[in-house]
Length: 459
Image 1 (cartoon, rainbow, N blue to C red):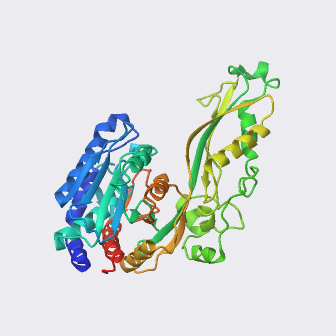
Image 2: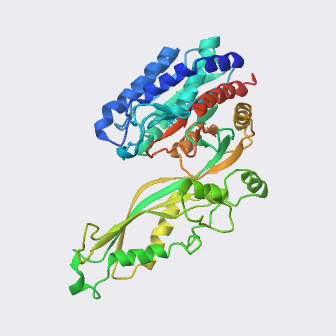
Image 3: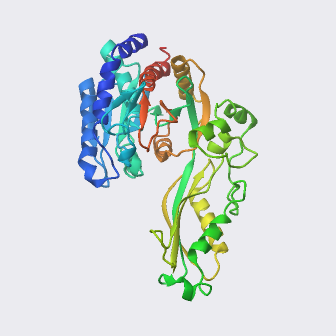
């Protein structure tokens, strides 16, 4: 059955590419209200596509008025076979700035072996690789090696507030033996990776205020605190000159890497030179006792994401601003409690603020880190499928990013999660000229075909 599916997929590459191009053409930008109809249309397109393939599919409306999720399942369940639930999201990031795109962002354009378009990698291309694996099985054999369900949401790019409620309220419908998430990347076209950890996240904004209005800097300067200066001084005391976080208690609960785990992470082909090449940075920066791979996924961070105050227009305006603001994020590792970390950072900043400054904090989101058992049978099945597809044993990595819904799947469904991405780290997701290698699309489909077979030992 697997060999027939692989042959069918290879013979229908052009057809599969055309389907993805049609899907990509729908500008399903969840962050922009003017695209609400397009978001809905993308969900309906995917639902209809599932139905045309022979699956049962329908839209599950948001319990809180958000965007619908697409659910699908194969019509012929096999009680003696495992069930895999495949997750994805059909909403995409805004395409701005448009003038930096080399081709229209919602017209799929092939150049030099890559498909360029918004959503090509994140995430339409990746979950369509799974969809096409199902199509390959059904068109070639009329059956699947195991039971398959899909849940594809429309709010991931705006925080995914609907999906946790949906999972909780539909846990019987979504019941499975393993959840497959493909929303990450390969390290190279021939080097797969299996993420076994995701960092958590705390995001907040701080406002520093010194007066009830902006003031003349000549009349009041030197007698009234400048909140921009005060906030800059506070922020400068959150880390030392090599990147260690100075907040009291910040590292108390950080999980310590075992020797064998550090050895496995050392296999990841990511070096300081790679970081410099990908970012254009002048030099790498961070805790010197840890490698760049360890700093990327096994160590927590505290970063300033935005900083503003006073007059920033053309020319000069000699103003003493009344307020200054900063947006701050902390990426967290397993065992760190997001609420505790926020409280520690807040309290530390309050202690650094003098009596002439008041600080106000607003949180925007919290998510705990995720840790996955590297030795689960499901992860081993994914490893075998990946090695057979890409020709190299996958490396196990700790992701620097966050996918909060993974924790919800683990908590509510109480089943293992497999994180096997099909894109490349330099695919420009969230940026102009996002792309997805044709080889990634094709190999992703083949890896999915093999994974379904490996789950039941039919490879």
